[in-house]
Image (cartoon, rainbow, N blue to C red):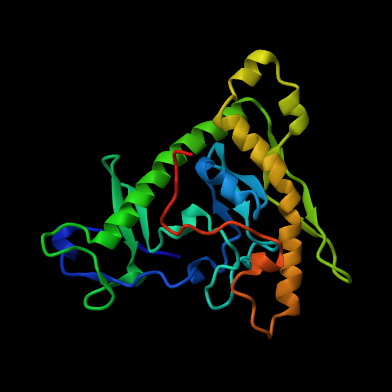
Length: 260
């Protein structure tokens, strides 16, 4: 688990950091939080659902069958796909809430060094160019995260999110796998809303609802990836597994058009 440390000009002016090398930190990650703005890029590659978060819900991309092994990740840390969810791309940095309600740029302690890697600050005491770029990306993500949360809350209030009794086939000779803790859009309930209730979901909420419904056709991604990993456990896995599984699009790393 990451140990987040808030960056400080006074404490870390002469410190360095080790940039992320791949996505090994997500090896056991079963889901990735997703944003409303990235739905068009997610849909060709991921099945989407919701998980409970406090009294509400959080939209996520499904990465695992068993809740332990990330099927989009190679053992050497490479992401086996053409698009990486935005929530994973800012690492080893993140934005965290402070006691006074502000946002602080934090770094995973494991990536903080005294003399190796990239500088955190320049000679004038400002964030280095690379760190500033990451901060801008994280701020864009945080802004859209609020929009995503508001859209999800409206779906919850409309009563169209329901438990998802998901069972996935794992191949010949293996028992089907029941996946617990996931939620989905109840399409019948969505289509049964009266005009006033339906109107409250226009825009982001309806886009999120339809994206989740459409994405369920990508559940085969998980089963096919599991079969592929099992078959090639002792062989080299292609860097772009999506090319094997008919994927498309490119990961933009820290570039993302949140206005589209």
